[in-house]
Length: 319
Image (cartoon, rainbow, N blue to C red):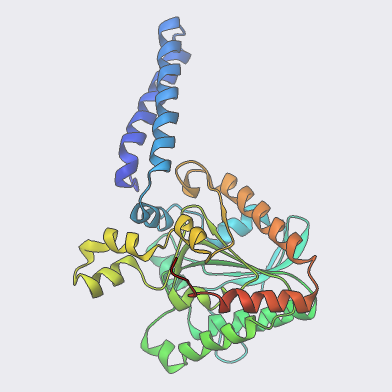
């Protein structure tokens, strides 16, 4: 049960029983083995639906961080028959934590930009664990302006615990790079669709997240701080991360109710890591639908709605 999450263990055990029953039925078919297979299949689907229906915010955070969960370039591989990655911010260098390039998304030409994590130590060092440097955000903006020039929609795939907080990033002014993107993305004269595909952490996510449509995959999360960071501040210990996750209202379901996001893209049962190809289909369709809606709007209306959308964040009334 390598990489299995705690709440997945009973389901995995039942799936193993089902696989064994199917194997026995294939070797020696009988009414008894067929009945057993049907019974186990029914139990498996009921348990799977029950788990998915009752996932806590903390459990969804664990799914969002799963090592087998599809990353940005995994989705690009599944969705885009053509992808040309471009490099460099024309100031400092390239940032492997934030790949970007022009692609064919379904039947649409788009710019795809996003965060990329690694699955092993070597790749995580290359990708800096998905935490982008200032040059990553500057590269993203350079290419977004290029997409605007050619009238191409922008697809932003967010998956980061946060922007890189190291000394080098501070020396190269990470705060200014993100702030610049916040302002400039607000003025892009082309449709922008942002999708949080895993972790959506703080300014690291917002740096490429100012969009006309902000969507979340079903088990992704979007938050001003990680549950562990919040727990360390409020409870003085990371062990309170589950309570922090609930208090932060960081799940797609909570954020949709609060009006912070514009929609939820479904995932395969159990999470995207159980069927990356199926998850890619949902992501592809969700983005294409959003682009089609946005392209119907005149550019001045698009810009005004984008501005008003983010200005409304944080406003509330007491009933």
